[in-house]
Image (tube, rainbow, N blue to C red; front, side, top):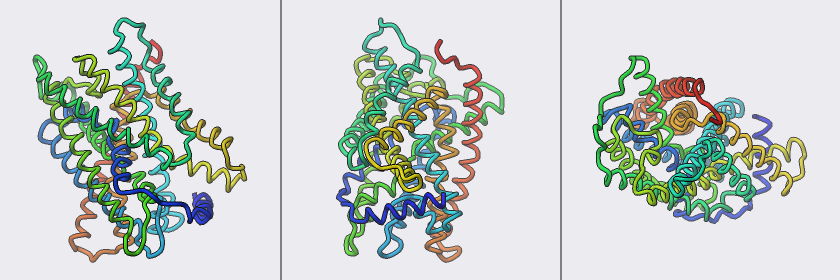
Length: 432
């Protein structure tokens, strides 16, 4: 990792004159695209395992903590005069040193970005399947794995776009779609009303099963707040001067994005659970059947959204891969490099998605193992290391509180998600 980072420093120096032209509203829809997605559809399922009281508390606390930690990252982006930490790993190296910083931050960020892309492959395939079955109920049905491959084929094409600025229109469309299908989800649930025999009790099972289900549900909640892995890359697209630092429009756009996030998450979680109770599907759109045309439209909106979300998380990985290949192996940059390197990455995420197409379980595992560190407590560690607040002051207590909550959440949700994946994998049939 150390040599990889030093190579990036050289390339970044060559790109110092690159135009940074994003506005605060660019930040809004990039953040909405990065955050609102697969996670919102599983929130009623998480509520079913947590129950009304714990579920509401988990969502509200997660929303508040992650907004706070986003604020920390935005402030740290230019914490050194004249220097911009345009990547999470750059900030980690500055705070923790060239060796520890890279080994702590880079693997976690890669897990977040790779995990999101795998889950979005599964989500896109699931929703394509549901769309096809809604518009043509009499057609021959294909297995879920084939639909994931169909969705993945679109990413081979879009991955050839150059950078985040190149996908601005796609990101905007994705952000609009996320708000639209979230509204359709909770509105359709509200119109449907509680299903016959709905129950809000915890599912029957052994004590161990109940504990692991709760742990996995907490991971699904953590996955829903997943924008931290690319927030510094988004802020890097904003111009900055001593009188107008980038943190001002970045924070404005982030707050707007979090308002949109709240409008998407809370109604879907609460109304979806109110409608289906303990029997809700891990994808609430799959549970909805009527009206067919509206359900089909909502599923296609999800497909459009995750098309853009996949690219938002993949672009930083593409840049890192190409920089590594050009600086370490002297591979000439250009179209051929992009075609081979990016297609290889898309093919890898597609393979993992087809192998483990367990939507809810993947959310729980990646939410705990990957997203909790980058979203809940790693920003606090970096803040404490760089800013060094006075011991026992309010900022000191706030950051240490987030660290304790985040570490506990990571441990329990990773355990629950991994157990669920193992259980489902033992009974899954790929092509039946």
